[in-house]
Image (cartoon, rainbow, N blue to C red; front, side, top):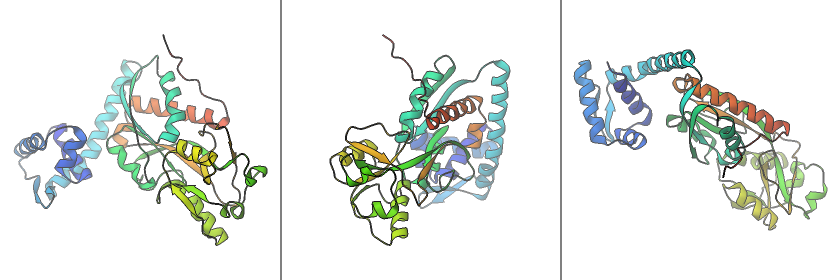
Length: 309
């Protein structure tokens, strides 16, 4: 029973098709099919059968896929113990991050890891809250956020580490009537047009809560993902918007005001599969991210790398 065969069965179970596994692991379906035939011969059991999407796991294949979780986690734990006995954590850690959080967390992380034997690989994505957990299939650490709790929806079964809590403020043009107020109520902000985010994205729950509290529908002039573009449209007078307090860069012509009366904050979290979190390098990077998050939340800017000539 080879580890690579168990990994393949687990990936088929999680991703749903051989084609999806091939795309995610940069292998061809024919190569994976050959590996499956070898696994069936070695294990003496039929592991897959035809399905409308190509193949599906048999009862024996599913049994092995489920057992692979525990086996692969134990292997990762043994590797971590080996790393600890041989020195500092080392290896490549793959991070997928929400841009609005990664912009503040990742540069100082590179600086902190400069003198270690840990290398980073990065990806970025902006997703609906329930989609962050799925990214943990491909990344060692997924940096996501939630406005409903301390972990995004769908993250059960993952190791979830809170990096920081960040208030979500109302961004208004500096000459807007709301800019004269020190804080804003749901009634205040419900009277003006908003620049929103796509439906189901975490920030959208805040204007929805405003609508519920006030009984007044909010007009969204546009729905956008990129906070930088949102800022520019706020300055241009196209509406007010919701932006994170600590990780929003100061922008000339725009001010932030706290929203009172409803919960308006996000939890920024690091998500990892248990077998990947068992690696000492992943735990080391997660610990560094916790420290950076604390610095950002306390108002102390983390140090970033100084460019070299």
